[in-house]
Image (cartoon, rainbow, N blue to C red; front, side, top):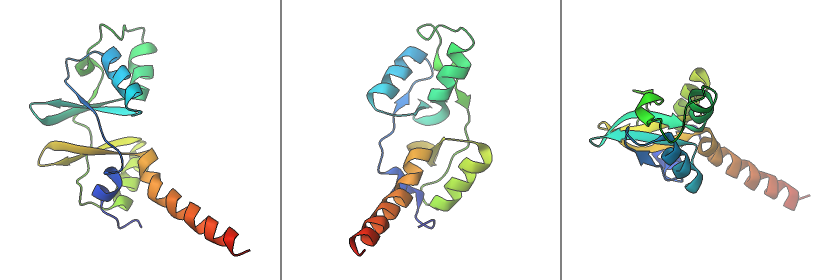
Length: 140
């Protein structure tokens, strides 16, 4: 299971992108609409940053910034750590755990092709656990 390529995990969930000049308010609406915890910031088709739901709280609201006037380039994490689509799922979990990340962009040739989150990183394990649990309950 931990040897699965990241591509097979990330394909379960679409990702959203925004320009660095978009406002926090716009990004927050996008995240709410798409049930996403992060927006990948892209310029000229290249990943330049990531903005997460935690950034809304800690870098905007808690500091008294106006979400309608604050642009993403001022509050995003620039040059975020990334993963490649062929790296294994287990490696992604280690990176997330060691760095305290909930979201990691997946990049191929500098282009964002997806995102892996703690939520969808757990999906394969959760699905296997539920299936195993159902089998056990069925045979009791």
